Structure formats: structure tokens, C-alpha cells
Length: 320
Image 1 (cartoon, rainbow, N blue to C red):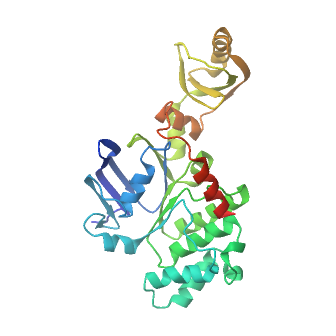
Image 2: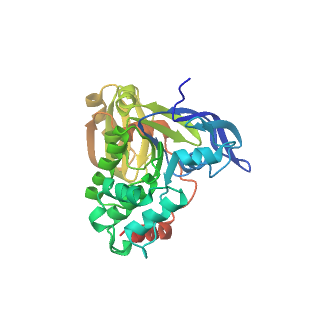
Image 3: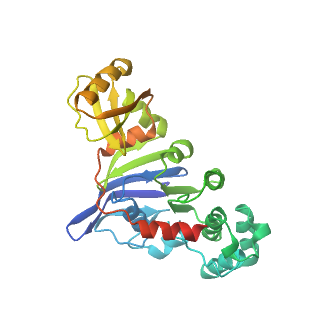
């Protein structure tokens, strides 16, 4: 029997009375799979369990046919994990960073393998420079080189492009796609819906520990089968019930609705906004995007914790 690269069955994790991941059943194989969700939805907990860094409360998970709870050593030989926080030493050269990982994995022909990993990430000509002189995009590619040095079958990437500029983000995804074409299974968490839509084969949307939507980006957008109306407003707004129109959420100063007939819905929505005494600045109609699918799946999700501005800025400084 051929196993998928990643298989979970009823995977569950509790922190005391808090259920972080709730009965997750999922199969991922030879694809770029993105797990999307708000902060606190269970994304990181899922990845930590799949990479053997956190023990499940119940249920099972297999990576390349090995059980993450009972066969951790075998699982770790088959995967690499690039966390969101920087995992390189800026006081060393790029080559020294990758060599460190090659030694940890006990790779026999490590000099050749280090050169190969650096070349894959287009860092060969800068390999002997100190990492402190690397750009944010180069540092992220160096982390990928470290992850590839032992030729894993499965690669886990936690927010691989966060804090990078558009050009660096595009370069990272070009390398990820090349790895996918080479037969590697790649499991990604990201907040960038446009990246998931453009580069990922399938996406799963998780909220409060449960998968709320699963499929290719095209499939998920097609399931809405409705027009999307977006209004930019200022002030509070409580959407009233409107026939054939559904409120799907608010992000910042934008509120979104789905409608059977978007053109007919535009004046009705505008009327209700102004009737409520809310300032309406813009109104638009468009086909569903992955952002709309996300809002529909998770609703007006309250972030469980305050945004850690200090931690975010510290992480960005490290990537520069």
C-alpha cells in the first residue's frame, strides 16, 4: 500500500482545557499545500505535531509512513522544518551555516552536498560572505539551503515570505515551485492569500482548530458561486438582513457581502450603509477571491491575543 507523504486521522491537541487542533483528518502528497487561518487557529500547533516537536493529545499522524508519536527519529530523517523566526547565525558565513546542518545530519559527502544546496538557492557566489551582510531574501534562501542539505522528502515552511519585499517573495516561491517539480511535498503556512492562490496546489482553511474549507484555490472560489460586493466605510456598521445578500465579514475599513446578483445588490447595500449613518467611501463588485473564501469560512474571527508588535519588528530586523 502506497502511503501519502502526510496523513492525519483525528489529530487533536489540547492545552489544558483549550482545544487548539480538533479532530484533524488530512492527506497531503507531492504538492504544495497551504494551511491558512487567523492567529490562534491551530496552524502552528498542527505543524509542530507533524514535525514531532509537540505530542498530540489523541489521534494519529504519519509522515512518509512513520508515526510522529512512536517513530520520531525516522520522521525527522524524512523532513525539514523552516520556522517563521530566523534560524541562521549571522556571525557565520552562508557556507558555515549550511555545513553546520550537514554535520548535524551526519551527511558523508557534506562538502559536495553543501555546495549543491547553496547552488540550488543561487547563493554559491556569496557563500563565503558573512550572513550579516545578506539581504532578507538571501537569509530566507539560506534557511532553505539548510533545510535541503539532507535531501528531505517533506518540507514544512512557516510563513516563508513574511517581512520580504515583493521581488524577494517571488524569488522564494520560484525556488519552492522547483522543489515541488522535483517531487518534494511542501506544507506551507502563510497569511498571504495571493501567494496561496497563485502558487499552491491545494489549500486548507482552519479556524478554531477545525478545517473549514479544503480544495484547490479554483475549487474554493467556484463554491461561492456568487458575486462579491466590497464597501469601504468609516464608522460602525451592523448589517441588517437583506434578501439574497449575505454579510461575510469586515477587515479594517472594508466590509464584504456575497450576492446572487451583484449589480442589483449594489444600490441596496449602499442604501443600508447610509441609512445606518455610516460614511460610505467606495463600493465595488468583483468575482470571488481567496480572501472572500477565507472570510466566508472563518467569519468575523476575533484574534485571541493582542498583536505582538515588538516581536514582529524584531523578526523583520533580523531578516534585513
